[in-house]
Image (cartoon, rainbow, N blue to C red; front, side):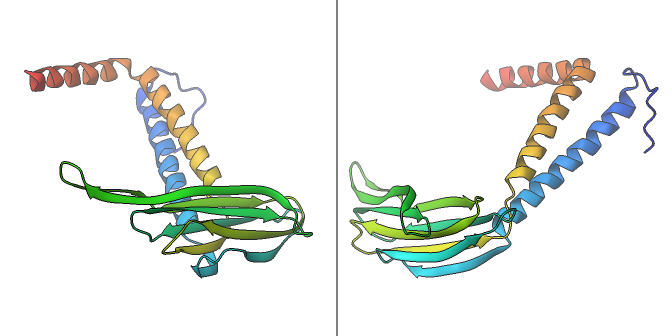
Length: 198
């Protein structure tokens, strides 16, 4: 499509087609975000979490950041655990810490119930040049927990943000260009909701 800068805003066909292309671009951004977040990972470790486990060295050079995703799953029943980790520098001094309480509870109270929060996921981005280590641990776990450390090739967050910004902008512009159509649709929706309520 050739974009004519002399087109006026009243030419809704032109602008709505342009918005349609923007929406297709947004969908492409969301699809690439999904694939980048769920693919392209290299397993650095997969197994049982053992307190004091240290992973590294992670060497970062200027202009080449790395992303690590830490996943843990708690297997215990009617118990709790605390999964924690530290990011350390080359001297094994702690730079910062992270952690989460994981738990499971079940029983009978006016019937059987089962509640839990069994999973932890942490994304670590190393951007400053240097050498780093990741140390993991667990407190209070009876049955133990699994641990998986993935090295991601890239992050999909920029794609998600660009897609979201463009989509929000396209929605506002569409409403501005088509107020009568939007008003009719909202009125029909309101009538349908009123009939359903009756």
